[in-house]
Image (cartoon, rainbow, N blue to C red; front, side, top):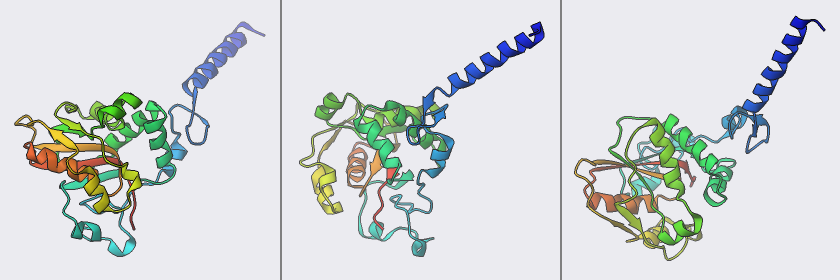
Length: 244
């Protein structure tokens, strides 16, 4: 082999090696080599919300397209002003969230939080990000709050303060997942949040959460922070459970 041919061979070897290094992890869903934890093909398969109720982020069926509020919001008095979600809580988004929430896959929360920040349909920036707080017993057991992890990656794109000091959470009587209706969940979370007075310039609060099912928890938290001085409360969640 000539000297030039040898040099090209060595250069090719290193280029291939660096390319493989860049693709040094597997997609969490399809296990293909990829530069990120979710490959582009799987990202396209994640279920988006699409047309949704502007009040509670519930995806609307075709016959309700253009409706101001969904039938649920027309009957219930929610504590927050508006809510938005990046995804429907369906496979495989539920798999990603559960792995990040219960199995210490913080890189998945990093990915989902980054995606949430990129997809935010902004009318105005809030004054503060407020992750839904976890009871102290849960924090001790798990070691982290998934809503705080999501908020940290939203903060990478929008340099807003994250508040984890002014609101605390007590244990619920039952796990929300054990309760079926909004009314049951609403009673279960009533009074679980305690709040200190908010700084005077925190007028618009963004509640950050991983999943909204009926909206009972977010509504209770929103009512609590309103009593502490907030004038506008928006919910931004990773995924929204579907009722229709």
